[in-house]
Image 1 (cartoon, rainbow, N blue to C red):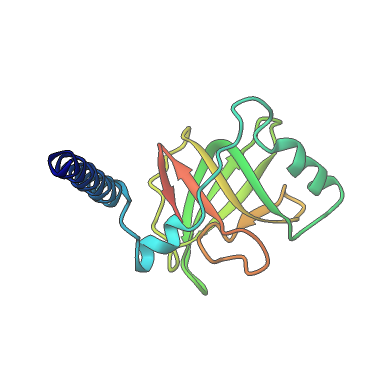
Image 2 (cartoon, rainbow, N blue to C red):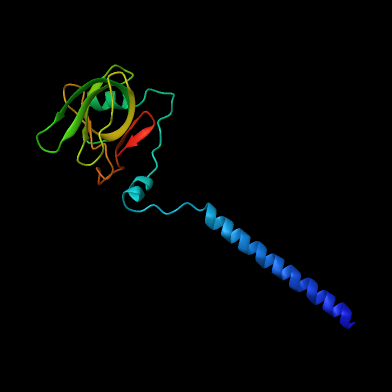
Length: 168
């Protein structure tokens, strides 16, 4: 009987040890797989993932056309288009990179990207870009600005995506 009791106790202890060891492995494994918490600027960039536009559709052209026709300003838009002109930087006030973007419907608009808040986007005529910013009506087709993180206090942050790189 004593021998049987020692055998059972030994089995229980071994099973407990193996169970605890497995739990330890699981904890170590899960710690290794967990991504490091970003800090500082990296945390700001990681806070809001960029949702790409669907490849189908007009890349936001209908939304801009509607805003242009109704002279609507102030709405956050997400667009895709081709760079038609790279203009000289705006030098009065905050430095801004300027370019014209042609949408799928043929409408062109001015894009101003704040160089004091975000990195310059290395675009050339003919490049495709995707962006999110605030649309402001004008009689030339409109303008999109606030294409950087933290730009819109009352809406989502802006950005420009070019050649797979996000500029915020």
